[in-house]
Amino acid sequence: MSETNSTNTPPTVQQYQQQLARKLKRVHDTLAPFTSLAPAVFESPSSGYRMRAEFRVWHEGDQSDYVMFPKGKPKEPYVIESFPAGSITIQRLMPALMTVIRTTPFIRDRLFQVDFLSSTQGDCVVSLLYHRPLDDQWAAAANELQQALRVRLIGRSRKQKIVLTADYVDEVFEVDGQILEYRQFENSFTQPNAQINQSMLNWTHDRLRNQSGDLLELYCGNGNFSIALAGAFDKVLATELDKTGLRAAKHNVEKNRVSNIELGRLSAAEVAQALSGARHFRRLAHVPLEQYNFSTVLVDPPRSGLDPETLSFIQQFPNIVYVSCNPDSLANNLQQLSRTHHVLDVAVFDQFPFTEHIESAVILRAQ
Image: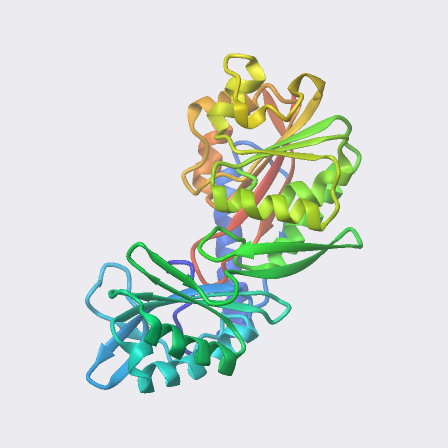
């Protein structure tokens, strides 16, 4: 919830530019010990940019509302009457869905959260989360609701998930003039800002287009970077531990007819063990590791950054692409990486407008 803009009125372009300037200064000051390069800056639209959002549902008597809770105030709900940050599809659906929630007992009863996952193509999955088991009466009411709203509806409660039609949306990006189609599953990580994600893919592809050798990607998710970058390398090995993310990656590799990517369900530590020969994994039995000549490794880690073991592992690669959602953890990791590599390029992507968060990326080359 911390990434969502909770204001009910659209922010101004001036407000956006002012906050972006503050975030750029933070990135500059944080990365100053490691590079003097001015980053490429990719701005977000100031509204309609979020493809996914989560809201608690608050009930008072006969009234129900979407709410958020200010930081540090878990018992003070803030009613969300509109959500300018949301995609056009989310903005269209929110009031229509709330009308049904307020007037349909089988939908309203003990509903505590609504999650939206949309695409730029107008598709949307809506997940309704409950503090009660879901039965046939709920399914009947939910089926009518999804037909009326033209959405894909999912019901969730403890140890229960009901998918009425599908639990994904299909997204489209254009990278270097090529159209790529990505399946994105509900309750699995996806980049929330579609326009900025497309900028990230194009910037990275442009910087790596003249590379040779093979690419290793850790934390590949649904194949977001691996698929977009595959044409710049001879072969790609993309790894992901999350089963849903790997399921999406397999679909997306096949859908986009990318023939030089192999996928493996491994953690970063397991990849290091496999490449060093310390351990052999059945999950990689289909991959001839001895035939790879890795020139580049790409990491897009969690907000906490890379652990010491993974940091040491990636230092063996001539080129490192590090995508970060936290300048502080990036700077912390650069303290070690800068002993063996220098920063070749920097970019800042405003993935999360009107929040304190900022996405950045650095490309490093061995000294």
